[in-house]
Each structure stands twice: as structure tokens, then as C-alpha cells.
Length: 177
Ligand code: AMP
Image 1 (tube, rainbow, N blue to C red):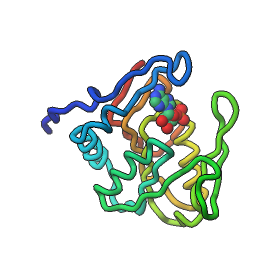
Image 2: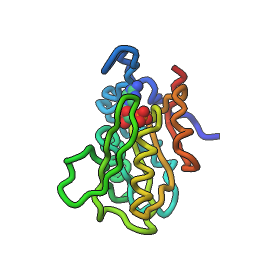
Image 3: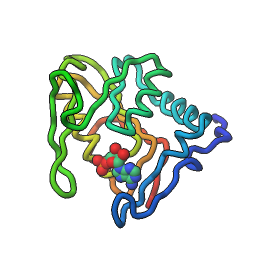
Image 4: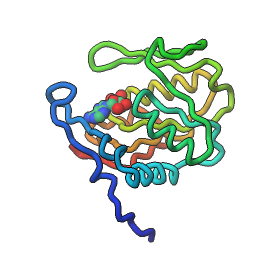
């Protein structure tokens, strides 16, 4: 049995009710980022779930950049950003996906990945799963394979995991409400 770390990541997640709009209980990761030991513990816990033979870590804008880049540094694997439209300077490949109201677009550099690459997607939080599902599709459209999705937080009551199909998914913290 592995000993539990003295530091509990959950203690560094702050609930902000009704942000950014009424009814949303926002999980604020700022206290975790602000504490060196907590941020480092979080990166280390994510690294435990890294599959073998990964070519790149893909982070989703914007909080996915923080954890994805830290994990890339720790594991010595390169980092690829997935960005909101109009932010990436070179030729991009885009995907449009459904939101609760309307649609959104995510982009990746077309030359960032190619056939046969194995990647891990990192984001701060899995809610409805729409963002991660679109990211999986975007990566697969470039011929690459998603070996795993890693999240710091998962809102279990939104069942986002169901949208991710067979892709192995790990979240460090689970919230029931
Ligand atoms: P979804 O596509 O619904 O899974 O939403 C995931 C994205 O929205 C993540 O990149 C999160 O950063 C953000 N997000 C959604 N719900 C919350 C929440 N309650 N607290 C913090 N971030 C959230």
C-alpha cells in the first residue's frame, strides 16, 4: 500500500459560487498554483498516470497550459497547445463543437502532430466533456492517437467521461456536487 502524501490537493481548490454566472460553482485552482509544494505534488501525481511511449503532451487553453506544460517539463516530453481561434500563427486545423448555447472552436497547428503520434491531453477540469471530446477528435483528424486524458478535477455529476468514449481518463480529484 502506498502512503498518502501529507499534502492534500483538495485543500488547495477553492469553490467560488455563481462564477462566471449564477448556478456555476467554479473550482478555482489559484491556491494550488500559488503553493509551490501543492503545484509540485499535483504535477507529480499527474505524472504517475502517464502511459509509456508518449510523443507529446497536449494542453487545452488556458488552464490546461499550466498543468500540461509543468507535466511536459517533469517528464521531458514536448508540449503542444490547443488554442481558441485566431491565436496560433501558422497553418491550423480547427474543430467546431457544441456548447450549451451555441458553438465554440478549437485550433491546433497543422504540423504539430502527424500519423502515428501518441499523445496525452491535459486540462484542469472535466465538466460536461465537450471540450475534451472535441480535442480528441481534432487530434485524431491529424492521424494521431490519444493514449490518455488527464485532469486535475472531474465534476462527476456532469458525466463528462461518457463523452470521451474508450479513451483512458484519469482525474486526481472528484467532486460529487
Ligand atoms: P467542459 O467542456 O464542459 O468539460 O468544460 C471544460 C472546461 O471548462 C475546462 O477547460 C474548465 O477549465 C472549464 N470549466 C467548466 N466548468 C468549470 C467549473 N465548475 N470550474 C472551473 N472551470 C470549469
